Every structure is written in structure tokens, then in C-alpha cells.
Length: 360
Ligand SMILES: Nc1ncnc2c1ncn2[C@@H]1O[C@H](COP(=O)(O)OP(=O)(O)OP(=O)(O)O)[C@@H](O)[C@H]1O
Ligand SMILES: [Mg+2]
Image (cartoon, rainbow, N blue to C red):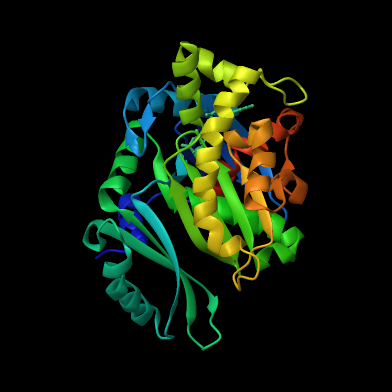
């Protein structure tokens, strides 16, 4: 079975080297960026976000490919990106990661071990998947601490086809959750090594909530919950009898103090509570007092993190402090005043794209 890396090499066929953009195909909006620099000294050079219409992407299916391609091209124009090379992030229920210890050996032996065990831990079928792994370090017992990454082959091909339509060349294939973890590692962990002892990252998106637990140089747990802010919009739409666009406007209509009309707040809260209790279920093992795996820090990103009440509600439910993860507070610089002016918005919706940009 070819590894994800081999598969990707195949896809590339003699591609030119050079910089690549980070491309996050979000279900609510597409984000593109260019990043330069090195660990602890990264700089965001270009960034754009282009909204998609309702249902252009549903889960990991591209329902309106023409619109998505147009949005990517509009993003590249707006950001002033000339490169045709892409670092692309896969996501969804047909992707997975697993941190595992394997006995030491040659790269081939480690790979054989991982492939042999993959039958047991890949829920969407090892035979129909691309599998890759990274060695993070040594384990105490002298083995290798590895991060295994898998994606269904047909998912990789779907993304590849879309990139062909957009006339872009895929230089790197990553997972969105790993891109976010990587940005966290390259900024926050560099600035504050204590975060490496255990941090939760939550990306509160439109159609999914991504949970990452980061420890000892990489993610030890990742999970995507198929719920998010779109469900809040749909509920406002239903209860207030308004269109999708009107419901979106009502949802983000908070004043400068973060206050919303009571009726809207009640709808948001009723949805948030269910979603947050789902998050808590997945984190219980890591947040219970006394657990040997206990994690001390929790960060949020994603459009949903802009909802004034999210941080407080999450903090109350998880019983721990919750902060916004803002890479600009941890050494990421902007190359222009225009980007700096938008740093607040970019830090909430742009982290996945920026994390992908780092891999370019
Ligand atoms: N100021 C705001 N207040 C409340 N909600 C907001 C605000 N800004 C954006 N959102 C919501 O955040 C969501 C978009 O977030 P984001 O850009 O992270 O999603 P996405 O990456 O496109 O989606 P996904 O990752 O789930 O595919 C939308 O539902 C949008 O309504
Ligand atoms: Mg997203």
C-alpha cells in the first residue's frame, strides 16, 4: 500500500520547488495565505478569506465545485498570491491521526509495524486509505514515538480533482488538525514551553468542531465532531423564519460589549450547550482532576470563537480557563499594515491556513 507521502509524490510528478500557499477549504469560507520565515520567526505575508454560499461544501463533499474554484481564485487575487503551489489540508470523518509507540528499527521496519497494525485502528478501512507517519521522538522504553496519519484514498482524490480544476498544484498534503497543531507548536510552544506539557486546542468551525490535545512535541489526540456554528444559524433561521443570510447576520449582531438580543442569545445558548457537552465528553479523561493525563491549558480558534459567550460557557463547563489562541501574540508577524489591522479576525479564522502555509 503506498503511503500518503508516496501517493502525494505520485500526484506531484516533478513539480517545481518554491513557495506554496496554505489553503483551508472551510465550509463557511475559504482561506488562503502565504507565510515566510522559520520557527519562532514566522511572518504572514498575504491572507484572504472568501465566503462560500450555504451548502457549497457539506462535510467533505464539494457540492458546488465551480463556486469553490471561483472562491479560491478570488482569494488568490484578493491576497495577491501568484504561486500555483498549494499546501492543502484534508479534514473530516475520513481522516484520522494516532499517536503510537512502536519498537525501534529501520524506517522500513517501523513502517511495516504501523501498516500491520493499521487494520485495527483505521475506522474507514486501511485498504482504502493512504497512511503516513512522522517520528516525533524516542519513547522511554527505547522505541519510537510516532504520529500516524491516514486519509481515505477517495477523499485524497476528491481534493486532488478540485485542485486540478482550480489549476493549482498540490505540493503538500496535510490534515487541518495537524496544521493547527503545527502553528501552535511553532508559535505558542516556542514562546511558552509549558504548553508542551498539555494543551487543548479547539477549532470551533461552521460544520465541525476540531479538538486537539497537544503534548510532548505533537498531538496525542485529535477528534472532529460533526457539529458547529451552522447548526446555530439553521436554528435561528427556523425559529425566526428568516433566510440563511439574515440568520447569519442575527447571529453575529452582538454589540461592542458582546451582547446579543435576548431571543437570539437563547437560541445560541440552547445549541451551544449541546455542542459543548459533546466536547466535554471527549475531553473528560484529560480534564478530570487527578487524572494522570490532566491538561492545564485550553485555547479556542475558529469563527465560533468570535461568539462572545463561547469562551465563558466553555470555561464554565470544562471547569478550566479558556483563552483565544492568537499566534500574533506568540511571535507571528504581519508584513503589512493592512494585515495587522485585521490581525484579530485572522487569528480566529486563519490559523488552519497559516499552519498549512508553514508547511509550504
Ligand atoms: N463575529 C462572529 N460572531 C459569531 N459567529 C461568527 C462570527 N464570525 C464568524 N462566525 C461564525 O463562524 C463560522 C465560520 O467559522 P470558520 O471560518 O472557522 O468556519 P469554516 O472554517 O469555514 O468551517 P469548518 O471548519 O467547519 O469547515 C460561521 O458559522 C460564522 O457564522
Ligand atoms: Mg475551519
